[in-house]
Amino acid sequence: MSKNTNEKLKTKKPNCPQCKINCFRVLNEKGDSMVVTVNENFEVEPIHTEESLEGFDLSIVYCLGCSWKGSPKSLSTKH
Image (cartoon, one colour):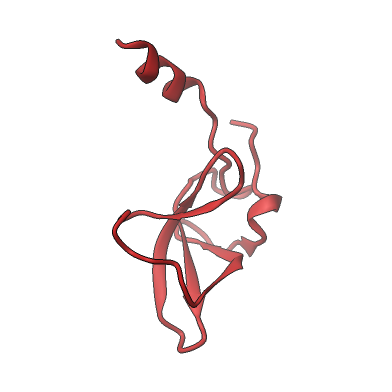
């Protein structure tokens, strides 16, 4: 494995505090949703990098694995 690959494996992305996955959705005012992840800096990122988060409320993420919702900062970094 390359050094960059090893560094990525060591990086711990924050997970849902209930079900421990790192896959969420965010909503806009119309109720449209977009699938996102949250990086190690607690920044919301779209799964599909060509999509824009403009107009979406990034203050609340909704877990795709369970009923949890909350601030990206309240996600767990314990695995």
